Length: 294
Length: 281
Image (cartoon, rainbow over all chains, first blue to last red; front, side, top):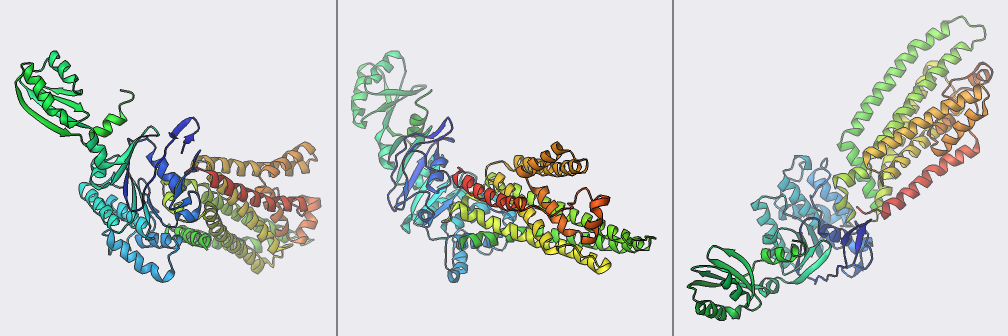
């Protein structure tokens, strides 16, 4: 899919597939196009060139949204309404039968930890409560797919933890979750698969384990670091950083570690430490996202 | 069905935000003030020595038409204020996103808002205009040409203004939309006066100018149509020779004007549906 607003390209040739039942992380810096992608899936933004389908139906059709739960970015809701009134409105729009509405509303309020607070006006809610009512709203229609756009960006650590637990619970229920985030730790903890997007382009897609495991590094600690050493190390990989007597070397294959040790010792350096380092998602992410123009 | 859910929500919003309460209290005060002023002034006019007995008719007409002219302004402002941010306000605050991600079409949402707002405005116009006409009738035995038509045309003006505002709010920011709407409303009002002067001094250019603006934004033209039916036949008969009220018409509206004023809200509503459906939120 490609989507442009006038001259500005928001999504450039994006191809994605999310499997049923998985927790999919859509990662990217602010302004990379994450929100545009989710808005296309929810019909808020028209698909540009290309095609998108949700639960087997083309996006834009109201029927495609029948089994979707969506928590928009910033989770702003009609603050003059009470929590229960807001959920009742959404329950009606979602087509919940009249006989089930009250029970289902109580159920989701309980689920997000707002039991007994439904009669309060949203205006009086704290940020955390507003976010919870948003989640309750997203889960109300027993969705098969839940789209969460930066669900924890405004929350304190406790709130973030609760959202993570909720995503885990959704996974257990077999619900597919599409999580937009720039918070890497969050994605690392809950997602099965991720796509990394930068300036409208997908730069990497894959299982989290593969992404993090694929690029490894070794860190060596020596008595001294000089140019001949760096030249010698460069034959085994890419020197990523030098910190005092410690050098981090990005390698394609962690199995080169013995060869690295051999090489520095032969060259007359004293080796204190050689540690294989698995790159964190953050390092993978920063390498991909900032690689182009810095 | 979904449209009615949105309509119900719109009414709930108006009640929750105390809009309805404020309207009821202020309207009651307005009608009370009108009734008081009318009952004080009309007996004084009756007491004036007047051979033809026309002075009292003039006084009653002037008071009633002035009162309804004020109602027209109140209803127009209410329509414009309700419509200016009807869609844009929700887009700007971000409250619309979760709603439109539900399985409802944009058209259903827009129509739901329209139906509820038009219903509330209609109740307002009927109650206010009806109360004033009732006061005039009870105090002065006031009998306009056709009160039902007059009130129906006042309703049409309000619907026309609301729908134009709704159209603007589908693509303009709230503040810009409000500026455009009030400018158009003011322009139409001025054009009505220009047209009246043109007719009085028999200047065709001024008259044509007024008609041209009425075509672009017929709010004042519809008020003038309503105003004809608000005046009693006895007054209209005399006013043709003695001169009428500058903001009220002495002749019934033409069929062309009525058709145009009916087509206008239909066209703007269709256009609003189209622009809203195409918009990226």
